[in-house]
Image 1: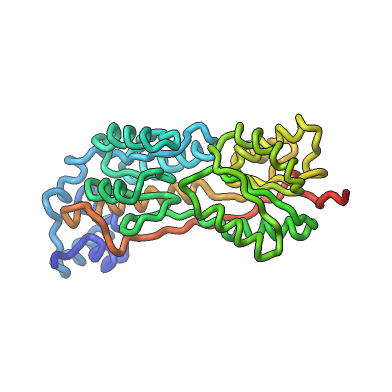
Image 2 (image 1 turned 60 degrees about the vertical axis):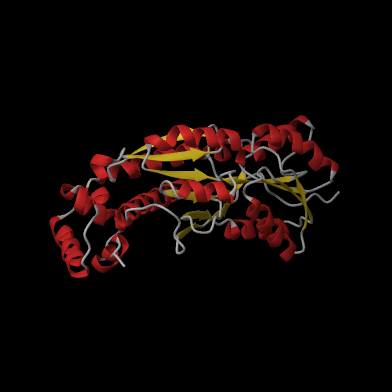
Length: 333
């Protein structure tokens, strides 16, 4: 079998993207590092195919990122960090919005795919069959969506959710509500349910709805009807909608109900009261997702094909709870 670019990277002790640059943009690699790569390639018998040798000249030099909702304040810091990371690797980033609709996502992919070297799809709504078909045509990375054979960046909320459940338990809460605002990220609701049940906390799930501020406004009335004393929302936008509507209903947060969001966006720290939330580091996501796509592009060029990889890499990003003023002791009345 032909030697792959990943084997050269492993032998030289560098990343796949560094090996790619050593052959396609040698001025961007330290001379000593480039020589080490060339020595490893010669020893293994690796020779870049024509597609790999002309990767810079024959490619767009652009990475595609398709997100569910570009208006969500969670995404701009990720986009900015990914642009900075990609720029250092010689790429630019093209961003598009799927609006969490399968038809729109398909249309955006069709428009973008010819203008990029590879795609990152965030919480894709497409079927596995469609994603496999797409991965067979171009380098692809999925975020918060597990599809066998496709490189994946997974955001693990386990630690943050467990900390949130422990906080609510310590505050004396027993009846909680989870506002589910995603059909694609089914693992999020399951993880929350398991963490709360482990601490003997009752958790009623509402939704799924759309992950928007208006969802929180709508759900707040239902939360009050369930006599819940704590709410965990799908993201900060939904949680902020809950805070807004609770005030309209004459309820005090956290005196009457505690509220927890997910993402730790800028709005969480400036809301009134400050929103307790589960933090996901946007720079880490941007770095790991961007690097994984660049490595996938380089690996595809080294193999001379795209297609699925039975040993496709999985990158996991952690989380942690950021306590603020929106959580407190359960009401005694």
